[in-house]
Image (cartoon, rainbow, N blue to C red; front, side):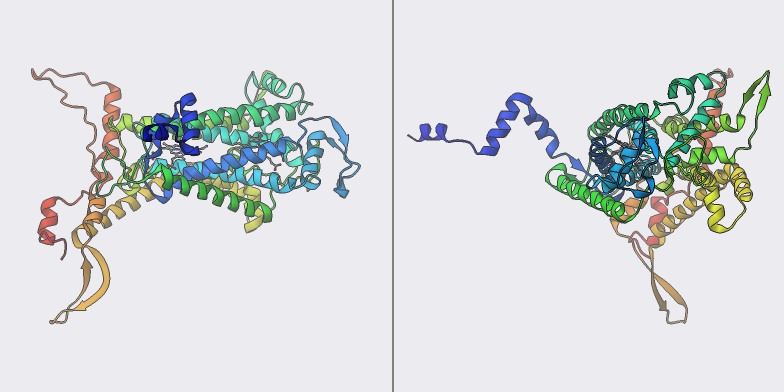
Length: 541
Ligand code: HEM
Ligand code: HEM
């Protein structure tokens, strides 16, 4: 009978596997809710993906390296295939990194991929962070995710530092010595901290094994947890989108996760992997055999940290070597002050979302992104921060700049000292002006259309340029943003004419808010009347 044959019919294999898994994991409802999740499209949303894929590549290659790397400072005599080092005493860590480079199959390539991926990972994070910053994607409800991201950036920098300290060659040893100097500069606790960290007098016999567990377990473990939380929150909040027709603060317009986004993301992973592999195959990075093993009585004058740590080096190089000697103790301000400024420069950007929402008093949710030009103060602030960062990078590489451009290293150091204070201010002012200029151009475009480049001669001899009207979609894009009003203190006298006491905090906030959203910070959007008057309601001249 038909009913019996229908009950006996076996479901397709895929369905049975899905059924089996659903019965145990309850994934059906999870998948149903998320497989068709919509992601908006924009090239800048790929930056977070580059960070994600390079992190995966780092983990894959890192696991391979752990198979051959010996995190030990026991002394051995090198007997590997790299002839110039044969017979030299060195730590097991260094010897095993030489082995990875010369004797392990594919070892050098994997080392280089690990290192290049680390450089690209942190660069991608920084650019991704700037994308989020300049578009205001950190606003409510994404402030916590901004903080998660920020922690990822800082932990990534330290994971990189502990990583390139592992091979125990002269370069990495010089970097660790630099760090020890910074720790020692801390008043009162510095010496104890250094002894604690290195298990005795520097360099001791422990730091490679300690850095190793921090590098392969502790920091990546925390980062993994943060990353999962970061991505869950991206899912939960839904991705932001740029303004456009049909896009509102209450919807998301884009492609579904499955199959479109997954296919794109999968392909993009291999693209990132491929490009990093090509770079690693052709561009040498950290050739640890060039300088030999680390010896505390030697320093490499050519020592440069990886780029993301360069700004800490810059702080120290730019700072005058001040010292205070008191009762037999030395306070090395030349190192201690930069050590204090280092976290501050990072923290300034970390807490920005909270400062902005306090100044503007804006507690609403935002899912539509800002165009950076429409928020000139924020954009100016971001460029000022970046300028700071770049000036310190230049200061950190002052020797390289001096050699390359045949300049005096003292002039570069003085340039960095002055630019440290002046550069960000100039950057802020210039960026703000550019943003206002772009806003003015947008206003012109709305009212007069786009310049077509076609010059027409009128019957009476006059030449005019034809302006093409913008499409409705473009008009919407250029006008949909809100021009905020500054947060006001409100009336200072109540209905009975009695003066109200205004807190200093509120006064400060009103002042800052006026600076932020006041008349100097935007070019008014054309009103509907203006638009109709100029275009005759048809959108053209
Ligand atoms: C391990 C490092 C990181 C990874 C793998 C990562 C990954 C991602 C991905 C894949 C997205 C969605 C796509 C996109 O908008 O690009 C995203 C969004 C986001 N990320 Fe990250 N991120 C990292 C670090 C950071 C950092 C350093 C920050 C900022 C300090 C940050 C803040 C955010 C925010 C606020 C969003 C939501 C953006 C929106 O909806 O427009 N992330 N992240
Ligand atoms: C954000 C994560 C990470 C970053 C930024 C990072 C970065 C680095 C860097 C720059 C080096 C120096 C490479 C060289 O030129 O020799 C290194 C070494 C190393 N890393 Fe990582 N790494 C990360 C995660 C991991 C993980 C998860 C593992 C293991 C599971 C790992 C295992 C190793 C090992 C064994 C070495 C020493 C071998 C060598 O120097 O070639 N790393 N890491």
